[in-house]
Amino acid sequence: MSDDLQLQQRVIDELDFEPSVNAAHIGVAVKDGVVTLSGHVESYAEKYAAERAVRRVKGVKAVAMELDVRLPEDRKVADDEIAERAVRILTWDSSVPGDRITIKVEHGVVTLGGEVLWRFQRDAAEHDIHKLSGVRAVINNITVMPQVRAADVQAKIRAALERNAEIEAGNVAVSVSGGKVVLTGRVNAWAERAAIERAAWSAPGVREVEDKLVIARA
Image 1 (cartoon, rainbow, N blue to C red):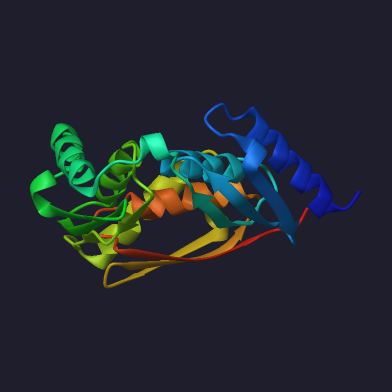
Image 2: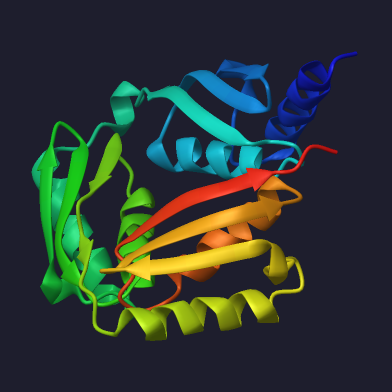
């Protein structure tokens, strides 16, 4: 059996194992380690859960999401109701500066805007909106405003890499310019690459991460 066929079966098994995903309506295709999911799910949260499940599988190099969100008729929610609930959920989340975030809802698609100081605040706001029923998609246009010098960002990322047992920090190079981080080097698996990206995004002032890391073939 080819590597792609073996990977395809592992992805299918992981989707079947994930309780928050109905894998019956999801198709899986694999080519050169790149996984494409097609078909449909019943919520944006389920689509997000399916993507996370695939990224957990060893050997996955990238994921292409071609899943549609098809809401059952009895679960459709008016845009004004979604907007009102979105404001409330961001207000309740103490990690999100709700007064810095704008919300627009059109046909179930939520667009977030505004400025925050940290990447985790941007991600937390999007994650909160994922939880709302009736949401068909989320467009996250929140920007992260740089607050520190490039040298400080680089040092924080390097320290995070050194602390992470999953990462061979010596194989990774980090460069920073104007809030943009560029990662280069070689890693052993998708999980290691994802851990490095998380370390980069965790530094204050990072607005963009360009991942040029190469996954070494076994």
